[in-house]
Amino acid sequence: MVVGLGPGDRNCFTPEALAAIAAAQVVVGYHTYLDLIPDLLQGKQVVATPMRGEVERARQAVELAAAGKTVAVVSSGDPGIYGMAGLIIEAAGGRVPVRIIPGITAASAAAASLGAPLMNDFAVISLSDLLTPWETMLRRLEAAAAGDFVVVLYNPRSHGRPDHIKTARQIMLKYKPPATPVGIVRQARRGQEQKILTTLGEMLNHEIDMLTTVVIGNAQTSIQGDYMVTARGYKW
Image 1: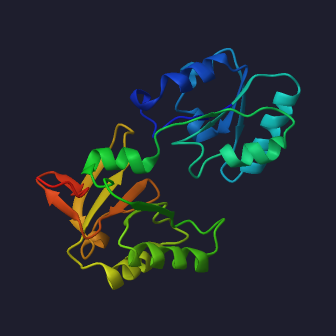
Image 2 (image 1 turned 90 degrees about the vertical axis):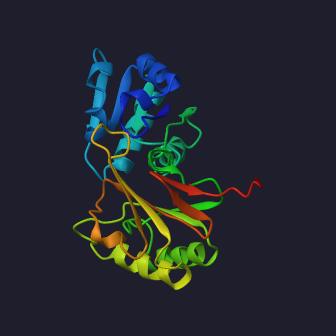
């Protein structure tokens, strides 16, 4: 089983995810995610791996499952969205069945905090170039901006790539006016959430890091009081 833990708040765990972890004999995951569920790990074998240990994590999980163990691989957000689901299926290679337990992804969690910015077509793009070439990412940013999608940016800034978010904003400004609404949510649904409503022109004046999700509106997006809303197109 590959289990989505959602953004981290226990209230955002699905009953299906809780049941899957309870049924598991072995829980495998990145130690930061395992730290979210210490009470659910009692009496279970726990396999913790460091960041960037995804391939080894998948191999260990599959080997344990092939040996007859009931294994849950935990992943933040939704395991099928920048998570472990695809890697586990590839590692399994048909040797063991794989069940995917969905979770709330950062885009949904941040959007709920902001209001309703994803009411129409949107694109989700990670600015981490560890696995995706930067040139590919630039083409995707360009296409999403030219198509007037609402754009959700994951992994927008880190110490190793502080300027990717600046480049993304420059591309957006080629197609979207500086007054385009932008929502910045840090630690969405993690108990220390911070939310800012700003504009494309002013967004870099605010803190943005790896724990932040950035939502850039389209031509139908507006700020209505404390909410960021993208019109669906209904006639009043």
